[in-house]
Image (tube, rainbow, N blue to C red; front, side, top):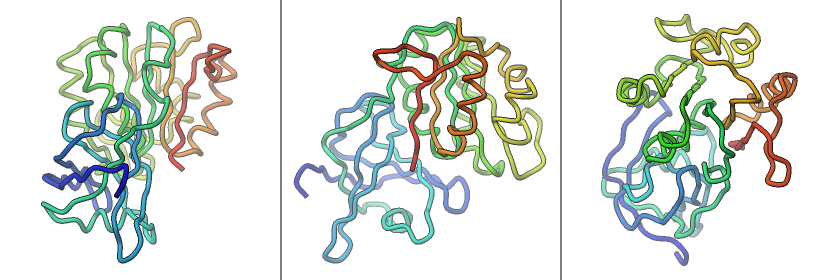
Length: 247
């Protein structure tokens, strides 16, 4: 396929049914942490392409964090891949959801639902956030505890970078375990539980938020942030909130 490089599956980790991380070896497209590429498979006479953020650090083997979408054109086929099978990775990465476009702030909040965590994992695997921000808060909201992918890696980073990094997991459809908030991000923000767990206040003078994942989360959270003076960031009108919708 023109414009694509072949990458072969060398490792997979199934976090839960229909939720996995796939790692590919091959020529890795140049990208900045937070960017996405098209992933392609030839299925019969048709080439099917879909967009995925890269969870890997730039220069490392390409890593995709994905959900199997029932009836989806591509994701079910990616879940059927066996070690050694190849996909096409677009040679050119895209997107502006990177730290390059985040204004200077004291506190960086990385707020994700589901596989929206992928670009944040990529960022945290680079040096930039640790040099730029005095406090980083990773908020990951999922339905079930088994969906808290990368939790062990995040907790290791917390231990390595304490007190810079805080990890705040939320589960909406199961009783919470120790260290996990029950319910949705919006409810935790309104109740104050989110900030208590993070150990830092969300304030316009000190905070920038990056939101990634379910558009409903972004839609519901935006007015709550706006009411607190945390408005969308634009190049020509600096603000406090940057977001990337996943569909």
